[in-house]
Length: 217
Ligand SMILES: [Fe+2]
Ligand SMILES: [Fe+2]
Image 1 (cartoon, rainbow, N blue to C red):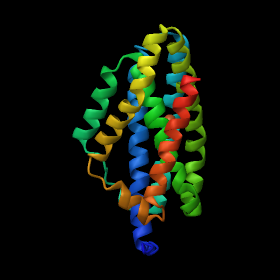
Image 2: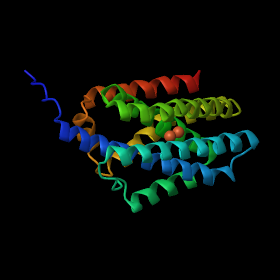
Image 3: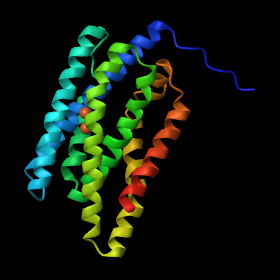
Image 4: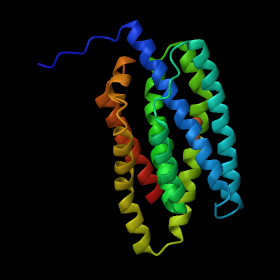
Protein backbone atom coordinates (compact mmCIF):
# COMPACT_ATOMS: atom_id res chain seq x y z
CA UNK A 1 0.00 0.00 0.00
CA UNK A 2 1.29 3.45 -0.90
CA UNK A 3 1.95 5.56 2.18
CA UNK A 4 1.00 9.22 2.11
CA UNK A 5 3.83 11.74 2.15
CA UNK A 6 4.02 13.64 5.46
CA UNK A 7 2.70 17.22 5.29
CA UNK A 8 5.42 19.81 4.60
CA UNK A 9 6.97 21.50 7.64
CA UNK A 10 6.53 25.27 8.04
CA UNK A 11 10.23 25.80 7.22
CA UNK A 12 10.04 23.68 4.05
CA UNK A 13 6.92 25.56 3.02
CA UNK A 14 8.51 29.02 3.41
CA UNK A 15 11.74 28.06 1.72
CA UNK A 16 10.05 26.35 -1.23
CA UNK A 17 7.30 28.94 -1.68
CA UNK A 18 10.03 31.60 -1.65
CA UNK A 19 11.85 29.75 -4.42
CA UNK A 20 8.68 29.30 -6.47
CA UNK A 21 8.03 33.05 -6.16
CA UNK A 22 11.56 33.76 -7.39
CA UNK A 23 11.05 31.36 -10.32
CA UNK A 24 7.69 32.86 -11.33
CA UNK A 25 9.10 36.38 -11.15
CA UNK A 26 12.15 35.40 -13.15
CA UNK A 27 10.00 33.80 -15.85
CA UNK A 28 7.73 36.86 -15.98
CA UNK A 29 10.72 39.17 -16.39
CA UNK A 30 12.07 36.98 -19.17
CA UNK A 31 8.67 36.98 -20.92
CA UNK A 32 8.59 40.77 -20.58
CA UNK A 33 11.99 41.08 -22.28
CA UNK A 34 11.22 38.50 -24.97
CA UNK A 35 7.88 40.14 -25.86
CA UNK A 36 9.48 43.61 -25.88
CA UNK A 37 12.02 42.36 -28.41
CA UNK A 38 9.27 40.81 -30.55
CA UNK A 39 7.26 44.04 -30.93
CA UNK A 40 9.51 45.29 -33.73
CA UNK A 41 9.13 42.07 -35.73
CA UNK A 42 5.42 41.44 -35.09
CA UNK A 43 3.43 41.09 -38.32
CA UNK A 44 0.88 43.89 -37.82
CA UNK A 45 -0.34 46.65 -35.54
CA UNK A 46 -2.76 44.42 -33.59
CA UNK A 47 0.04 42.04 -32.71
CA UNK A 48 2.39 44.90 -31.77
CA UNK A 49 -0.24 46.42 -29.48
CA UNK A 50 -1.00 43.08 -27.79
CA UNK A 51 2.71 42.46 -27.19
CA UNK A 52 3.19 45.98 -25.84
CA UNK A 53 0.26 45.52 -23.46
CA UNK A 54 1.72 42.24 -22.31
CA UNK A 55 5.10 43.86 -21.66
CA UNK A 56 3.29 46.36 -19.40
CA UNK A 57 1.38 43.56 -17.65
CA UNK A 58 4.49 41.48 -17.05
CA UNK A 59 6.35 44.50 -15.68
CA UNK A 60 3.50 44.97 -13.19
CA UNK A 61 3.72 41.29 -12.21
CA UNK A 62 7.46 41.57 -11.67
CA UNK A 63 6.93 44.65 -9.47
CA UNK A 64 4.12 43.04 -7.42
CA UNK A 65 6.09 39.82 -6.92
CA UNK A 66 9.29 41.68 -6.18
CA UNK A 67 7.56 43.73 -3.45
CA UNK A 68 5.92 40.64 -1.99
CA UNK A 69 9.21 38.69 -1.91
CA UNK A 70 10.81 41.50 0.09
CA UNK A 71 8.10 41.08 2.74
CA UNK A 72 8.13 37.30 2.52
CA UNK A 73 11.78 37.50 3.44
CA UNK A 74 13.24 34.36 1.82
CA UNK A 75 16.31 34.22 -0.46
CA UNK A 76 15.95 35.94 -3.83
CA UNK A 77 18.83 34.12 -5.53
CA UNK A 78 17.78 33.40 -9.15
CA UNK A 79 16.84 29.81 -9.93
CA UNK A 80 17.47 30.05 -13.66
CA UNK A 81 21.13 30.77 -14.45
CA UNK A 82 22.31 33.46 -16.88
CA UNK A 83 23.26 30.74 -19.37
CA UNK A 84 19.81 29.15 -19.14
CA UNK A 85 18.17 32.56 -19.54
CA UNK A 86 20.26 33.17 -22.65
CA UNK A 87 19.15 29.79 -24.04
CA UNK A 88 15.45 30.67 -23.55
CA UNK A 89 15.95 34.13 -25.08
CA UNK A 90 17.68 32.78 -28.16
CA UNK A 91 15.04 30.06 -28.58
CA UNK A 92 12.24 32.63 -28.74
CA UNK A 93 14.25 35.15 -30.75
CA UNK A 94 14.71 32.66 -33.58
CA UNK A 95 11.11 31.47 -33.79
CA UNK A 96 8.88 32.39 -36.73
CA UNK A 97 5.62 34.08 -35.69
CA UNK A 98 3.40 30.96 -35.58
CA UNK A 99 5.91 28.95 -33.59
CA UNK A 100 6.36 31.95 -31.29
CA UNK A 101 2.60 32.01 -30.65
CA UNK A 102 2.52 28.28 -29.89
CA UNK A 103 5.53 28.24 -27.56
CA UNK A 104 4.82 31.51 -25.77
CA UNK A 105 1.07 31.29 -25.28
CA UNK A 106 0.14 27.61 -25.30
CA UNK A 107 3.18 26.41 -23.44
CA UNK A 108 4.72 29.14 -21.27
CA UNK A 109 1.60 31.22 -20.57
CA UNK A 110 -1.18 28.59 -20.46
CA UNK A 111 0.70 25.68 -18.92
CA UNK A 112 2.90 27.88 -16.75
CA UNK A 113 -0.09 29.63 -15.23
CA UNK A 114 -1.85 26.28 -14.76
CA UNK A 115 1.05 25.27 -12.48
CA UNK A 116 0.97 28.61 -10.62
CA UNK A 117 -2.83 28.38 -10.22
CA UNK A 118 -2.38 24.97 -8.59
CA UNK A 119 -0.52 26.51 -5.66
CA UNK A 120 -2.99 29.34 -5.01
CA UNK A 121 -5.31 27.29 -2.74
CA UNK A 122 -2.26 26.00 -0.79
CA UNK A 123 -0.61 29.40 -0.37
CA UNK A 124 -0.52 31.72 2.64
CA UNK A 125 -2.84 34.77 2.33
CA UNK A 126 -0.05 37.21 1.33
CA UNK A 127 1.26 34.98 -1.45
CA UNK A 128 -2.26 34.27 -2.66
CA UNK A 129 -2.97 38.01 -2.82
CA UNK A 130 0.29 38.64 -4.72
CA UNK A 131 -0.76 36.12 -7.38
CA UNK A 132 -4.24 37.51 -7.96
CA UNK A 133 -3.47 40.29 -10.48
CA UNK A 134 -0.76 38.33 -12.33
CA UNK A 135 -2.94 35.25 -12.83
CA UNK A 136 -5.88 37.34 -14.00
CA UNK A 137 -3.66 39.03 -16.63
CA UNK A 138 -2.17 35.69 -17.74
CA UNK A 139 -5.67 34.62 -18.80
CA UNK A 140 -5.73 37.62 -21.13
CA UNK A 141 -2.35 36.67 -22.60
CA UNK A 142 -3.48 33.10 -23.21
CA UNK A 143 -6.71 34.33 -24.84
CA UNK A 144 -4.72 36.56 -27.20
CA UNK A 145 -2.37 33.70 -28.11
CA UNK A 146 -5.14 31.21 -28.80
CA UNK A 147 -7.27 33.64 -30.82
CA UNK A 148 -4.33 34.83 -32.84
CA UNK A 149 -2.91 31.38 -33.52
CA UNK A 150 -6.35 30.14 -34.56
CA UNK A 151 -6.78 32.96 -37.06
CA UNK A 152 -3.23 32.57 -38.43
CA UNK A 153 -3.84 28.84 -38.95
CA UNK A 154 -7.06 29.56 -40.83
CA UNK A 155 -4.96 31.34 -43.47
CA UNK A 156 -2.97 28.16 -44.18
CA UNK A 157 -3.90 25.30 -46.51
CA UNK A 158 -5.70 22.54 -44.63
CA UNK A 159 -2.67 20.25 -44.96
CA UNK A 160 -0.28 22.89 -43.54
CA UNK A 161 -2.74 23.72 -40.78
CA UNK A 162 -3.10 20.05 -39.84
CA UNK A 163 0.68 19.55 -39.89
CA UNK A 164 1.24 22.57 -37.63
CA UNK A 165 -1.44 21.43 -35.17
CA UNK A 166 -0.02 17.90 -35.12
CA UNK A 167 3.41 19.28 -34.23
CA UNK A 168 2.32 21.36 -31.24
CA UNK A 169 2.37 18.56 -28.61
CA UNK A 170 5.98 17.83 -29.59
CA UNK A 171 6.90 21.51 -29.31
CA UNK A 172 5.38 21.61 -25.82
CA UNK A 173 7.17 18.39 -24.83
CA UNK A 174 10.52 19.74 -26.06
CA UNK A 175 10.16 23.02 -24.15
CA UNK A 176 9.00 21.21 -21.02
CA UNK A 177 11.98 18.83 -21.23
CA UNK A 178 14.34 21.79 -21.59
CA UNK A 179 12.82 23.45 -18.53
CA UNK A 180 12.89 20.25 -16.45
CA UNK A 181 16.49 19.74 -17.60
CA UNK A 182 17.49 22.98 -15.83
CA UNK A 183 17.75 20.84 -12.69
CA UNK A 184 15.51 22.93 -10.42
CA UNK A 185 13.76 19.92 -8.86
CA UNK A 186 10.38 21.57 -9.31
CA UNK A 187 8.67 18.38 -8.09
CA UNK A 188 10.17 18.86 -4.61
CA UNK A 189 9.32 22.58 -4.59
CA UNK A 190 5.67 21.86 -5.36
CA UNK A 191 5.47 18.94 -2.91
CA UNK A 192 6.99 21.13 -0.17
CA UNK A 193 4.20 23.68 -0.52
CA UNK A 194 1.64 20.91 -0.19
CA UNK A 195 0.89 20.10 -3.84
CA UNK A 196 0.63 16.57 -5.19
CA UNK A 197 3.08 16.74 -8.11
CA UNK A 198 1.50 13.84 -10.01
CA UNK A 199 -1.93 15.43 -9.81
CA UNK A 200 -0.43 18.76 -10.87
CA UNK A 201 1.17 17.14 -13.94
CA UNK A 202 -2.18 15.55 -14.82
CA UNK A 203 -3.85 18.97 -14.53
CA UNK A 204 -1.21 20.51 -16.79
CA UNK A 205 -1.73 17.75 -19.39
CA UNK A 206 -5.49 18.30 -19.27
CA UNK A 207 -4.98 22.03 -19.79
CA UNK A 208 -2.68 21.28 -22.74
CA UNK A 209 -5.38 19.12 -24.33
CA UNK A 210 -7.98 21.84 -23.68
CA UNK A 211 -5.94 24.62 -25.31
CA UNK A 212 -5.09 22.39 -28.27
CA UNK A 213 -8.78 21.70 -28.74
CA UNK A 214 -9.51 25.42 -28.65
CA UNK A 215 -6.87 26.17 -31.28
CA UNK A 216 -8.06 23.34 -33.51
CA UNK A 217 -11.79 24.12 -33.17
FE1 LIG B 1 3.00 37.40 -15.84
FE1 LIG C 1 1.78 36.56 -19.08
